[in-house]
Amino acid sequence: MLNSMTSAMHKIANQSAEQTIAGAVAMHGNARRLLTTGRHALTVLGAFAIMTLVLMFFKPDLADRLQALSPFTPAIAASTDDNMQFAELRDDATSPAPDDNKITVITRSAAPNTDIQQKRVTQWIAKRYRVANDATNMLVSAAYTTAREINLDPLLILAVMAIESRFNPFAESPVGAQGLMQVMSKVHYDKFEQTGGPRSALNPVVNIKVGASILKEYVKSGGSVEAGLKRYVGAGDMDSDDGYGAKVLGEYDRLKAVAAGKHVSVFAPMQGRAAPRVETLPKPIDQKSVANDKNAPEQKSAMGDAATATI
Image 1: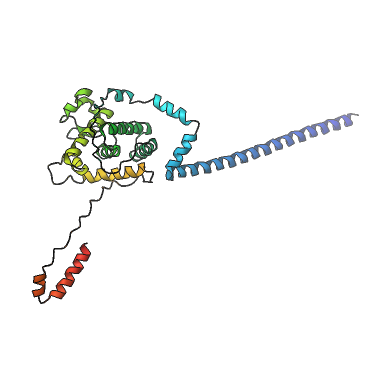
Image 2: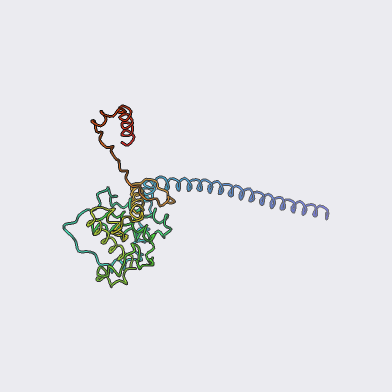
């Protein structure tokens, strides 16, 4: 009797142990399957994220369209608008009086002032000059607003800012040029009278407005963008501006390409725009001297070859 009860208890214990082991094995198997499924899902998501980043890099216009379709875009835009850190600076900056006789001083094709192109320029500048995207957005917006007010190409203003200060609003040169556009506040103090005096030169919005107005004045009086840039850098009475104008126009060309949706590396060297090639024509041939010269055939042939090579 005792043996039968003992064997029954052993049997029950063995069955319970087997059930416990089977449950543990099943749970382990389920956990492994869940882990494998999770790994596969992460792999797919990772591949999709990489493809998206590559697509955004080479096709920024398509990335903008996808962002516009996102349900989170309106919320992000509203949050950005509510947290504009330079709002007070914009309010303090006095806008120029409207001019009914505005003159467009930039004859080159300027980038149209559209949101998508401004966004491309903002993102590119932020990466190239390592400036926070929100701060870059504020500076670019101020440049575009000023450009509309004084009828100047915003990309030219941004190019000057890039060369002058690399978008550092608190930059100051050894000679006293200050801010984003390196304005000589001691020289142009009268232009700061309505904004609090020369001390407001470090106000980014004021600095952009004053610097851009000075640039337009110089371009208009000089008759060309190149002449205006030469005077802006203080080389108006000199034979050369040491390549300053070429550097600004080189960066202007890159910004224009970015605004147009072309891929321009943020690591592109700061190469200046190449000077236009000046073609020279050969001197006219004196037919009488050639006819009287005993070596006329040889000379005429040589001069003809030279003329072909020069043109």
